[in-house]
Amino acid sequence: GVLDWQVTARLTEHNILTGGITADTGSTVNTGFGAINRHQTLFSVFADDEWSPFPDLHLTGGLRHDDYNTFGGATTGRATLAWQAASALKLRGSYGTGFDAPSFLDLYGRSAFFVGNPAVKPERSHGWDAGLDYYVPGRQEVLSATWFENDTSNLIVDNFKVFPGTTANVERARSRGLELSLSTLLFNAVKAKIAYTYLEARNLSENIPLLRRPRNSLSADVYSDLGRGWLVGAGGAYVGHRPDVDARTFATVDDPGYSVVRAYASCQVTGSFSVKVRVENAFDRRYEPVNGYPQP
Image (tube, rainbow, N blue to C red; front, side, top):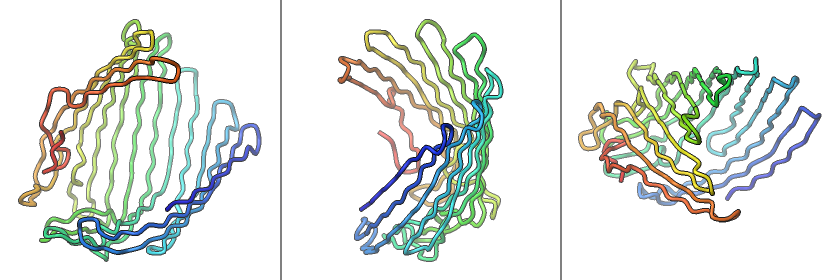
């Protein structure tokens, strides 16, 4: 069960403070990976402040403290900045820390091919990003670029170098890269969005790539408002090749990249009733986001 309480106070015209508490309790009896029969409680307090000292400058800062009966306490925080430096240029950035406790499956799960590891430690991370948005003058077009970097200690991973497989901690890991996106009006009411991500994700302790993180990924959509409540569109996604673990041999392999296409439409029949339809993987591509787990 979960109990949440939150309150928001406007301290000044340009300063809003939000705070709250969360109490969470849960039990795991049988997940299909053994009769785990464990119980965990979590009590959290948090506060977040939004402040705009000037009309073109927006700042946020937040803190959160989590107290687990199983893993003790952890305090994390995040700060962000967004500055409309000029009419066509916005600068933004953020810095934050994180804490992620292992699941009971990570710790105590058991099957013919997997056994949990009670010695696995929680993950701790810190990361930052910096970027800009450029609004092309005279056009309904926005160009965006963001550099991001995240360092993690005790990253929780699957270890298939032993049999049966288990979970383990990577002492030091890093993910960093570049995100680029473009939103534009092609003609009339036809709009397009395209986004590309370049990612470097490595296990720094062993100097090897992290599993299932593609170096290159791309997504794109073209859509149009036809009027009378109708919207139609089509899009696609590309995920590049990435290291993975063969589901049969447990050897490290290089999974091939794949592309999928989607199409969708919606109709706003009345002010309170709409109909939507979506077709995923429209060309019936056979692919596996995770080795051994095919998508429909």
